[in-house]
Image (cartoon, rainbow, N blue to C red; front, side, top):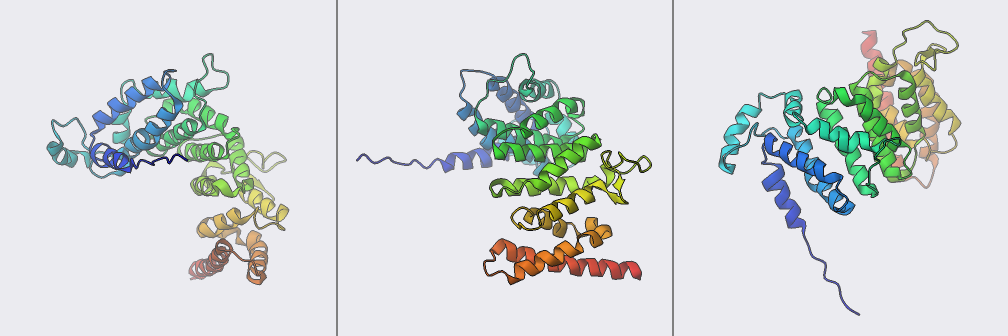
Length: 336
C-alpha cells in the first residue's frame, strides 16, 4: 500500500510562540484579535482553521498579555525596541492591561461575534458547528473573566448567558469548560444564589473521568468564594437553603457536599473529586469538619483495605491523612 508521510509542523507553532506571542506589544495583539473576530463569522473560512488559530495564536496571545512580565505597551518600531518598552509595561496593573487590550471596538466585537451570537434565541445564530471552536471560545471567555473582569463588566449578562447555554452542551469537554467559565464569573461578579448553588451542585455530581480536571478546576475556583457569595442575609426559614443560607445551622454549600457523599457512599468513583476537594481546601472545611469526619474515615478504611487500589486512590488516602493532620494543627493553634 501507499505510505503516508507525516509532516512535523511543530516548528511553526514554536515560531509563533517565541517570535509573535511572546514579543508582540498590546497594540499588535489588539489588532490581530480584532481581525480574527471579524473573520470568525465569515462562512467561507472553515471551522478547522478558526480552531487552529484560536488554540495556537489568539488564546495564548490574549492570555500572555496578563501572565508575561514583559509586554510592550505600544507598538515598537522594531523587535530590538521591545525590551525597552517592556520597562513601562511593568507599571501597568493587570486591570490596565485588560483595558488596553479591549479598548475601542474590540470588546464590542467580542460581544457581537462570541457571546451574543451564541444565544439560542439570537435572530442570526452562529454558523459555527465544530466543537473545537466552541471549546476555544469558551476558554477565551474564561481568560477574559479571570484577568479582565472589570473591562468586560458591562457585558456580564451576555457572558453568563453564553456560559450557561454551553453548560447544556452534549460535548462533555465543552460542558465542563463552561462550568469553569461560570465559576470564574461567580468569583468575579455578584451572582444570584440560585445560579451559584445549581452550578455547585452539578459540579459535585460530575464524576466523569474524561474531564475531571476541568471539574476540579471549576470547584477550586468556586469554593473559596462560596462563603462570601452565599452569606445568609435573611433569618432562617423554610426557603433559607434555596436562598443560599444555612439549613439546620449549616451553609447550603456544606449541606450539598455532605449529601453527595452520603447518597453515593457505595461508589468511590462518584465521590473521588469531592474528597479531593475537601482535602485540597482544609481551611475552608475546617469549621465543618465534624460533618465530614465519618465519611472521610470510612472511605480511608475502604481504600486501605482494597487490593485493587489505583495510584489515584493511594494519593487520595495520603491526602486525607494529611488533611486530618492539618485540621489537628489548626485546632491546636486555635486553642493557644
